[in-house]
Amino acid sequence: MKLKSLNIYYIIGIIPLTVINFILGIKLASNKIWLACIISIIGIAVISGLIKKFMVMPYSVASYGKLIPLSLDLPVESNTLLYTSETMDKYDFLSRTVEIISPIRQNGKFIVAVNPKLLRKYGKNFTKCAVVRELKKYSTASGLKVILGLVIPMEVLASLIMSVFAFHLNLSKYFSGFIINFILPFIVVVIFGFTLYTWNRFVSKQDMKLDRYLLEYFSSSDVAHYVKVMNELQSMDEKDSSKKFNQHYSEERLKNIS
Image 1 (cartoon, one colour):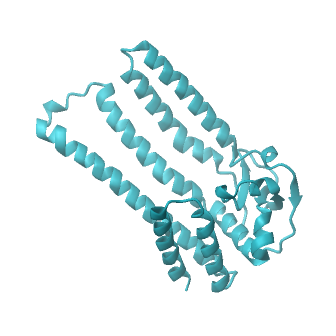
Image 2 (image 1 turned 90 degrees about the horizontal axis):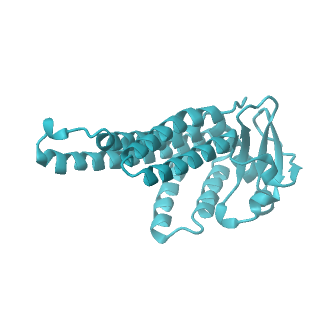
Image 3 (image 1 turned 45 degrees about the vertical axis):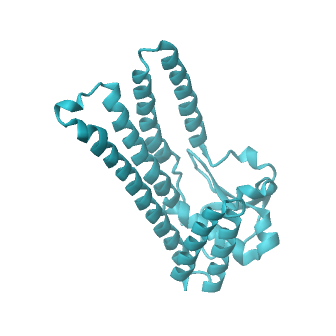
């Protein structure tokens, strides 16, 4: 599989709406110059930070420290170079496993950084599963779809709400007080809840697709082991309620594998 940089799509999908929301925030605060100035400064800092973040994702090559070449016989071909990075194993609670370093412009091969703990603790088959899954996730833009699938609807909803106040739209011309004070807020809450629900279902389907893809190259026991271990790693420092949700989610994925 041939990987292509996806960074520009993050910029196109997130930056314009973020700019619009900050402009609307400035307009809302236009009666208080000091507040408008603060929002402007925060907006410039946030947007600059996001653009810098999207130049190289998830982190710059330098931040990985010393990269050690990794020889791993993968069942798929790709335009990548494998390395291990001890920096990824520095903090257990971050659960960093495999990361594809993606600059906004990539002419040569992509660098894939692997947490050496995977090899030490879980072995080569597990590491191969993790790498192949990450390559497929990146090549199908699954991670991009998941992030934009939540960010864009939330930003659009925020823009619509702020526009009503920023442009002083007189809704009373079109709706009664009951609708404005009760029905419209209720509709906003329903839209918010429905968006979160559909997004969660979408994330679940994306994960299951990737799990099924792994079955083309690995045994069901290997893939099931990968899902169980990843659930344990991601649930390490979570609250009991979150752990129960993740356990249920993990069981759904395991049923999908068997």
